[in-house]
Image (cartoon, rainbow, N blue to C red; front, top):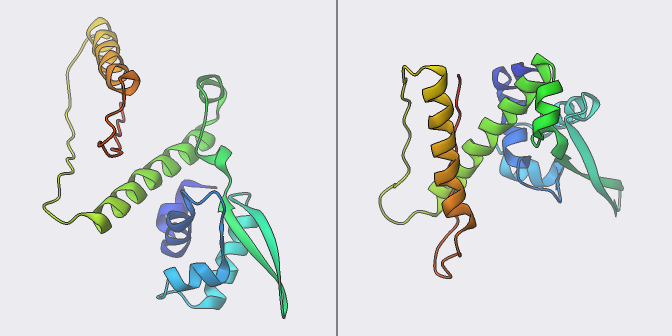
Length: 169
């Protein structure tokens, strides 16, 4: 996949629908979700994404007229370990960043569809002027704060909340 995924509206919409669907969706299901995209266009783009290695077939189901395929995003495309990240090429990193932002966008879209009251999401960008030592301390403090709540006992009445951070040193 190239960073151009964001430039192609149809592929972006397809990927956004599939980002968190490990079981995959069929073309028919995608067609129901993406009513503004003609079925033939959907087929063409899903096939191209499959050929480019972005999608995988999760299962095949027999139907009267043949076989229905279910597609999902290849998980490896948006989950990467530290060693892989350090060895990744620029294009591989751009793929990861693209999927990362798609995942965040999908999480917000799902959240927004379920809210009954005011939107409590927050977004901010802060540019900090830090030396190397200060920057390392900032990252350590941030990591400690996130780990504190990540490893804390879960509130049985709490709900899942997505925290997304991007640090560009």
